[in-house]
Amino acid sequence: MSQKRSIFEEVGDSAPKDAAKAVGVIDQGHKGARGGIRLWLMVLFALVVVMIVVGGLTRLTDSGLSITEWRPVTGALPPMNEADWQSEFDKYKQIDQWQIENQWMTLADFKSIYWWEWGHRQLGRVIGLVWALGFFGFLAARKIPTGWTGRLVLIGALGGVQGAVGWWMVASGVTSGEGMTSVASYRLATHLGLAFVILGFIGWYILLLGRSERDLMQARRGKEDKLFSMSTGLMHMAFVQILLGALVAGIDAGRSYTDWPMMGGQLFPPDAFSISPGWKNFFENPGLVQFVHRIWGYLFVIFAVIVWRRGQGSANGRTKFALNTVFAAVVLQIVIGVVTVIYAAPVQIAIVHQVMAVLVWVLILKARFLSHYPIATSIREG
Image 1 (spheres, rainbow, N blue to C red):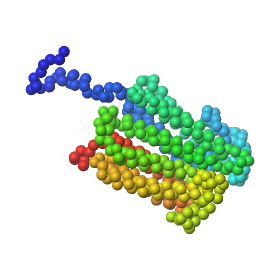
Image 2: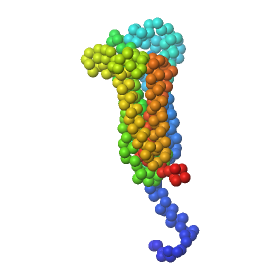
Image 3: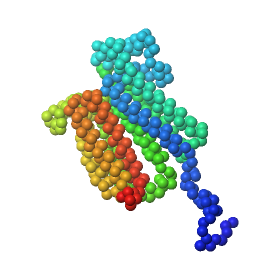
Image 4: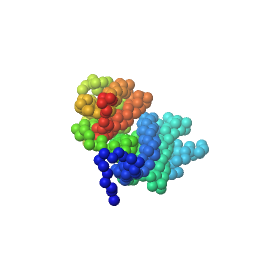
């Protein structure tokens, strides 16, 4: 039973005991290894970024069809002797890519593309293993904070789906007698798009775990609704542009027209609807696919300017700075995109363009997070 106290009575040694009951009430229901889980997610984040880069190089080197079977377990081991290598090469010789484009290849040439695809798949296995070890380890130790189990399961489930989508993509090009020399571009776009979705979820969770539940609840009161909705729209536009870029890469459309800002000396590419039925041109006509990618890029930049201008009115310095970095990255990405087109998408420049897409995506994600959970700026900082 509480005792009466004078309003002038100073807080003595007994105060901390009572105060301890009140402090951290919000966080008591969210105990867990937040720091450890955040570190684990950062490792996963880095691995997914590397996976996207290796996947891009696998596509740019036309290595994706070198392994013609999906063996999730036994495929972890590469060919161990010359007989095994010859067996893999013989399987590759049965598909259209070799029969139409690569009959010049020797076994040594085949090995060079095989290692790219094997490394890409092996990295996928490593990511799955890191997720499983981390998740089940934290689960067994009962260190997962309240409300986070489903989120962490979602990452693993999406990773499993991504593996199946990867084979679904490769299977579209492992054909004989159908004239397919590469994977279907829309399947490639699905595969890359899902990779960015996974990266987005992991990145968002890392940002959430970087601050306490108490801090997040307080920060949400200062949410900049308009800026949050605009940055969300910018994120969606970036995602569409990433998918369009995958369509361009899937049919090597980046090498079809190498002049800019015109295309073949025209505003609109010639023979843009030469394929029948007409809808196929949006996936298979190099000129039209590159044109759509360019136009959406222009719209994306315009909206990025609008969001950036809106961000200049933010009272939160870190949110404003985050949007400044987004704008700078978008401008740099456009420049790299133009250079990629002019030089007919060489591997070195094209992969930089893809890496920049990852950077733009992550920076938009952070700016969106800060508009939702702003960090108050002190008078001195201001």
